[in-house]
Amino acid sequence: MLEDYIFQNLLLALPLWLMLYSADYAFTLLGARYYAAGAGEHFAFEGSYELTPQFQQDVDALRLFPPSFIKAILISSTLIVALWCVSRIETEFLLVFKLVIGGMMVQEFAVLIRHARNLVLFRAAMAHQGMSGQIRYEQWLSYRLSAAEFFCFAGLFLIVGLFTGSISFLGGAVMTDITALKHRRLSRKVRREAD
Picture 1 (tube, helix red, strand yellow):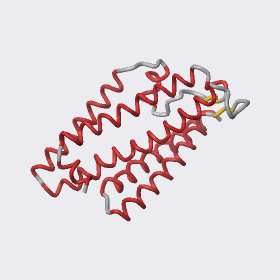
Picture 2 (spheres, helix red, strand yellow; picture 1 turned 135 degrees about the vertical axis):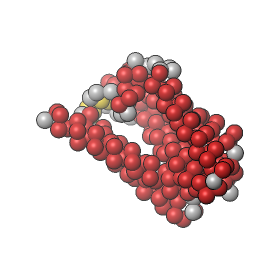
Picture 3 (cartoon, one colour; picture 1 turned 60 degrees about the vertical axis):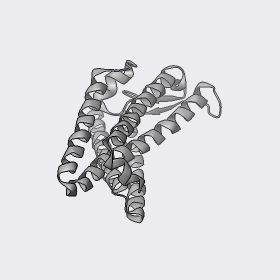
């Protein structure tokens, strides 16, 4: 199975993670650029375009390689290497490795799908095609919508994981659910602070 092949080889798993995580940040910056370049005429987001608090200032400033991104990629890569090394010593730990690292990667697919949708929508907005007027999202609603999408992805990943027996998709369901819960909590917090 492809999943087993990837996770048996650190030289495949680590570069795959680096590609996915870097693509996430690159597409975030591209979306922020589109938003600043004219998509904001049709969509107005209260607060930052970026939902993850630790990246908001860097994305708002359109920084390419900020310390927050470098730190996150170093920590996540160290985690991958450490878990892989432990799974080489304790073979039973390979299941945990697949669950955690596979889950991180599968969650990135959900994030990249959301970026693709935003980029298509923002390009249409910039070209003044297919829409008119402006929609304004309060920050709490942006978090609430994000939580709803992540809950849906988590359900999809759970179904795929159960039907295929893929530990990575089960991990993706867990990781995506955790992110959904974080965004729901942030939605409630921001809304309380606004009231």
